[in-house]
Picture 1 (tube, chains in turn orange, red):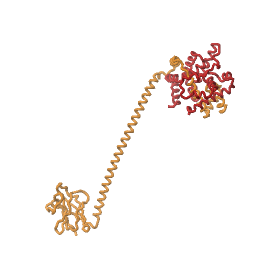
Picture 2 (cartoon, rainbow over the protein chains, first blue to last red):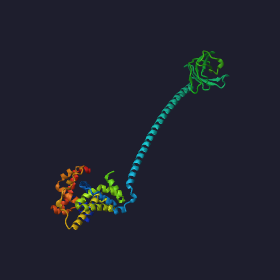
Picture 3 (cartoon, rainbow over the protein chains, first blue to last red):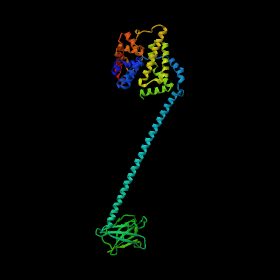
Picture 4 (tube, rainbow over the protein chains, first blue to last red):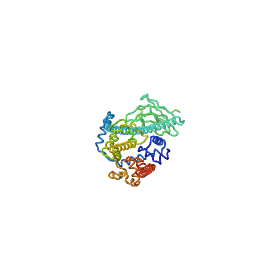
Length: 262
Length: 180
């Protein structure tokens, strides 16, 4: 029997009803196993037959089922370990659905937490980013200041005048950078102590013994303070005055003093 | 879960001698199998006994079922058809008479009109023609062999076989959507 004979001569339907010899049966099974189109038609014929069988169904009396389920052959080798399989099955299904619900809930919680923590991390990173940007700006500002300071320090135009502590403040020290041509005056007062709020330091330029106001300042750290424009000076001095400064210096409070060299 | 997966599970549980699987199997297939048995045997008590025997055989022989040789339904169908034919012969022998003849054929699909026709099978059966319907019913659901049909219908044996196959294929063609 070849494939064509098998298909056209109705061997498959005969095989389904069992109307073939043992030899034919073997040949048919071999072709079903090896030929895709034979297997496909075999499956289609079976499905069609099953459909028709349900169409011609007749309900048997319910007593038959009872007799089958109570038949000693069924009871004899029934797997009684699984006697409560139905219950177990429903319990299993229940357990399975509960488990599934739990897993879903856990997954949801997990992803919610993930999301939350991601969100939190994002906020953290954003904050950190802002902080870094601020720091950068700060550092950049400082760098700019230092560059300016450095430019002043290394400039041949600027004179560096060190103001030494007087008897009033022997440890105090200040430095003045002065460019007489451009009338630029800078002050570094980092070695001077802080004053009360109603007091301020005042820088004076002495020209031929006459003090000229060069500006008030607070004791501060680090960078230069820009003072008033001074075109001529023999010496510089700092006194403590009331906040806002005074018309003329209170010489008794002089903190530091230094003469312009050359 | 597809029906193939479901059947795989069902077969596994049957092989494991799980009575709940037998319970399901009976609820799902007993009416289809009883229809075949009843029409083949044509005797209420014998048909009931035969149905009982069929399910016991399915239960006992499930390990012999080989998925590569057909669907679970085909395997059960074959058991039912053969048992019913055996029962008819035995009954004929005891009664010393021949059971109802093919001549008393009535359209069994026609008589089950009350059944809900979800897939429009009535229309399909009308479309395939009377001869197809008769051949299918006699061979598949009334337990008549090719030879018996050939003799009674005055049709060559080869023609009976070929026609049966073509008739089933026609139904399948009409029901295309169900197979896709």
